[in-house]
Length: 490
Image (cartoon, rainbow, N blue to C red; front, side, top):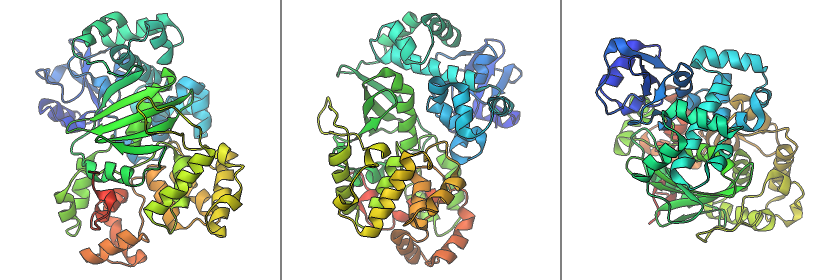
């Protein structure tokens, strides 16, 4: 969008928050860059120039605005809706892969050379992977500076900087303030967490957001010991590269409250990325709802509760295991099966606030399980053990960087995997916004009640008009049934 100057100018002059994250406005006279909804008086049109990313602004020598804090705007919805190499690269950079594995590691995961990835990102975003990762490190550093009492040297290395000097130089360059000045400035406005070791922050999103199906689904399917709903918040444990974490997510009218307890602060970037992915916070609900509303049979559902998101997962392998456990059983039975696996094979953790007890077991931990101990039909035991084996040996990878169609082909080749299991994994683990479940019982009931075709083939043909947002159409169709997944717990 940043190449459409006239449209960008209109968004800036109207302070339209829907476009935050789509592009950034750099002001040539002040050398400052802002989000479109910045509350200050818009600059003159001739003084505006537009960039696709904060990293490109920083690389061009612009500093972040102190009023609108553009580095904290929602991410571009393009990286959710697309499956090409640039979108996959952006999702991996958001997960901190460049900090942990470098550009060669990023390229290896995508199956391209480092030079090809550099060229593609520069062409589309005006910044290469190192510049994009640097901008993310700066944002992580700012969060740690403002929300913790960590010494600055610890902040530097936790944010991914190779030296304290590089950290100091980057913070000054990006925010026009020294790290100590940022902390002093934040002390006047940021309330510190009452629990030692907990990082409290706000996760922005594009309005509207309907929390009912999003948090209702997560709470209704929560695995005891790993997840819970308590005091208006969804809480769960996280398996992270340097340690583990516990997150508490609370819906608010203009943001999601996030409280993170991490055993190693170097995991902050990935933990935030996983939480945003879980709640689908970078979606563009206006674009989604406008297209679905064009169908007269879907329009009443959209108008009744707009802004529904797709509840996802913090770990693709975990969700695939849970999807198999949930085949042809009730939600309660699926939770029971998962809880048994967690108790037997999960790693115990200490929850500072009590309630959560384990990390969900990794594929490696499940690779040696005895199928005879599973209270499942024999065919489903085979399905589960085959899946776990493929995940453990790396022949099957399910994550934000996965090629959606390749992953579908690999899943359908496994024994016991039908269209429903493959598509629900594509929707919630891989994040494909166009995943569709025409064979799902709830979808077929909804279709029949609304007057839509109820057979899978006919419903799929009708749903072609909803593309590429069929996964969101599923969320609206599920609301026709009065199921706990559609309601916030009391």
